[in-house]
Amino acid sequence: MPSIVELLTDDPLGAGRDGAEGAEGLQTYVRAFEAIDADAAHLLLVAESDGMVVATMQLTFIPGLARRGALRAQIEAVRVHADLRSSGLGRAMFTWAIAEAKRRGCGLVQLTSDKQRPEAHRFYSGLGFIASHEGFKLAL
Image (cartoon, rainbow, N blue to C red):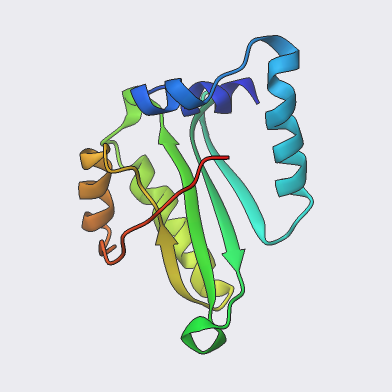
């Protein structure tokens, strides 16, 4: 878990909203992981290199009535270690995630990305994603 949290905080946006001090600080992440792990509709993916976690993403499968009852896949919390960006690792992870979405019968793969991440937006566009909607969030 500490390795995943490190990836989540390895940029200005993540540093401001993620992070943990010691074992107690990791407990919220552990609880979230346990919930993800207990539900087959949620996957937490990690990539390792030489025993080190170097990338992560969460993949969630959402049933819905829209689009004729299509199942959709939601990709969130994508992070690749700074030393491995532009190495093809992110593309490989997305290729796997999209294939898994197809295997599960999804009609759509969607993601959100902060407006302050133009490099990520170019990456997603290069994978065929289209910026088709405006997203809204309400922090609680």
